Length: 284
Image (cartoon, rainbow, N blue to C red; front, side, top):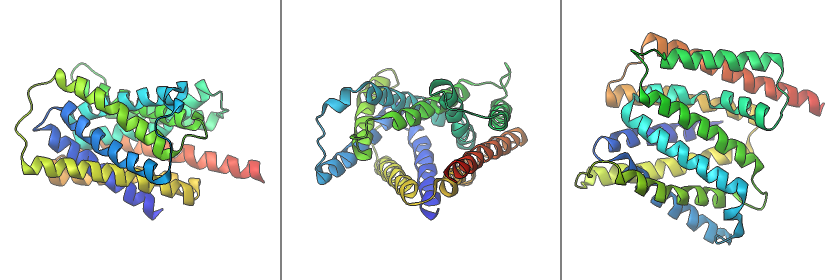
């Protein structure tokens, strides 16, 4: 549980640094640098473990779909962080467990009872409260955050279906490697980057370090802890993001964002606790 909380703190810190770096450099450049750093670290792990990197697994349909989902999520969320308050984007991302439950029910035909369907619908209402889709309040950044969250759900869904012989570091390397050309193409359509300075170099080093560390901490937490106890702590990412948004960007979430966040988190917690309860009954 401690590892999960620390992992969420790392992810929130990486998000804040991405937003800071995107104020001086195009989002495509920031994405490319993060992808280069992340893929190098995961490549080193694969080589250390003796994992074959050049493999037909890269062209497996599920792995390719996972990579596409990772690319879509990265592009959408990088733009959302650059254009929108950190706490708002993080609040929308908390709907991930709800979207995952919805897609699993539709695509994998997993059985979802009326209680969980009600929780999912309430959580989606919470998302609508956060984004307030009216001509006066709706922004493209919120659409990017929504699209990124759906892409993350597709990535997690395909992770469940990935071949068992594909290790976690290998899948991670493939995903980060796929982000490199995506970031380059994205940068071609943006403005000329500003000159690199030591603060920008430090920011990018922090992005790579926090993203990599967070990913690894979460992976370890999910492997050594009970899923029902560890998974709900993913929601600690939101208060970390709110604190960083307040102290770094002077962001103060409004009443509607706070209310929608409470509804999304409450619904997501109920869905995960309900799933854990059903699994315990089935095991008994």
